Amino acid sequence: MSNSKLAQVKEAKETFQALMELSRLLCTGLDKETMSICVRLCEAGVNPEVLATVVRELQKAVEMQNENSMADQTS
Image (cartoon, rainbow, N blue to C red):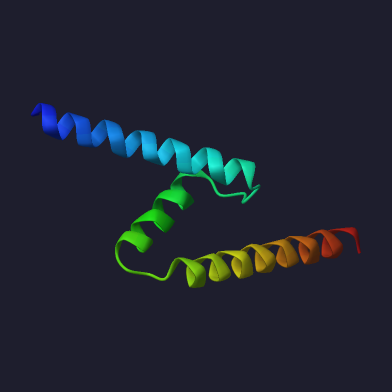
């Protein structure tokens, strides 16, 4: 691998680590895989604000489903 390519890979890793740290500080609840998917979607042209809204809605839906499952188990 050329020095140029190695530098690009290193920069990409550092950028991703910074995004993960920012995600953690903002308490987004996103894991590395999910963050990676979001980054790729943004790179492909998806509107980041719309993507953030979809992610929040999906997180709410999962939370509600988990709450319903817990309620069903205690009944």
